Image (cartoon, rainbow, N blue to C red):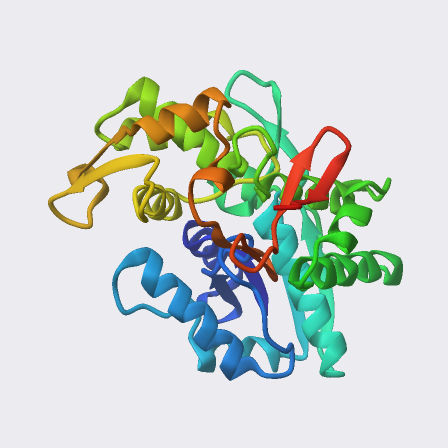
Length: 318
């Protein structure tokens, strides 16, 4: 069984390997709360489905239980990944799941780290889902995951679902290749001390100020600026973040939508949004923070907030 992020890439691989042996994992694990026991698959899938229903504003389960069980029960699983956050978290989750349940599955890995752009320039492969047909089908042969690398992947998953960011900070500061670089990139999801926003919210705020009010262009600019970054997200989640920035008693955006569709949504900066963007009033001083970074619940009400500083993450003193 072959497992990877991205429906398009799965369709391409299906042409080579057969549709019954390829399955697309459609739940980017870098966004939303990631909690729950590795052994309790039902509870974990329900939590993730609830999150995506909030994001997409529709009844949707990104991963069906029966399909996932079929994959996990396979005697051999090959996971296909780039070097970006969601692909690496998928491999980390799979290694941890198999180890925790003492499953009999044999794990193999196909990791593509770079390819050539249209002009022949080297480009990093953040996600298998970004590859075209030729680049994907010129893949290396699957290899067994060395025990040392599997241990690193399990450490990444453990750090990502932890209730405090200490382990992720330590892994991000380590010299552990792709896994260490991914951990470091994930730390940018935490709000910075100057603006009080994570990297994606800050980029959205800036691009709405420069390219709004229709949100299609700001979202496109936000994604384009980060295309070669290890940390990539989808446009649906960014639209959800815009709505969050426009919610609450001290919104940073004024959002107007005639339908849930991106094309029917506009946003402009409020006075509070301009103050946050200028760095004169950080968001955590203006509004309630209630958010998740992996397994860490960020809450100003509970005094659970970590901020990015030049020296690393520091717990907010309130």
